[in-house]
Image (cartoon, rainbow, N blue to C red; front, top):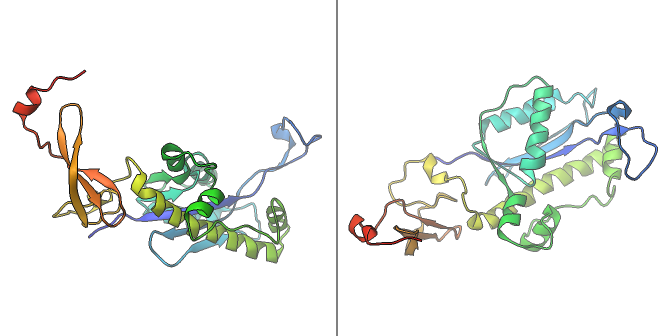
Length: 259
C-alpha cells in the first residue's frame, strides 16, 4: 500500500542579538539589532523510521550563513506530504519559510502541517500544552533538558563555538523529534480532520483515514441532521471514522424534519 511521506521535524534558531539599555519592556529598534536570527540546527525523521536526520551550523565557516543548512531542510520538506511539528504553524514552518526566501530558495512542494500543540489545545484541557509537559505526561520518550548548559546558556555557548554545547544541542534537538513522534501517535486517534492517509493508496476495503490500517470494524452509525453513515473504529490506532455512503434512503430522508 502506498503511504504518505510523513516528516516529524524540529528546529533551533539563533537569538536576535541587540544593543539595549533595559532588561524589561525594552522597545528594540531595527537599528539596535547587531545580529539577526538564523537557523542553528534541525532534526527530522520519517514517521516509523529508526534514523533521525540532524544537521547544524557547528562547523560552518560563517555561522550566520545558513544557506547549506536550509538547502538540506528544503530537500526533506520537498519530499514530504505531511509535516508534524509542535507549534509548527505559528513558529517552526513560518521561520523555515522566512529563511528559505531570504536564502533565495523557492517554495518546496506543498505539504500539510499537523501541529501537535494546536491539536492538544483543541481536544484537551491539559495544564500546559508545551512539548516538555505533554511528553512527560503521555510518552515514554521525554523531551530532553540541557542540564550541562541550562536555559539560554546552551545557545550562548553554541554561538561561542563550544563543542560540548554543540554536542548537547544535537542531543537536545534529536530527542525533541523522537518524543514529538511518540506524542503525535498518542494524539492522532483524537484528531478531527486528520489528512486522509488511506487516500494515498487505492484501498480495496475500508481503511482508517488516520493511520491507513485496514484493521477496522463497523461499530454503530454516525448521524447528521438528515443522513446516516456506517461508523468504523480502527483496531490499530483507535481512531473513529465513518463511511461516505448514506445508508438511509431518499424516502426516509424525505420524512425527516430539521431545525
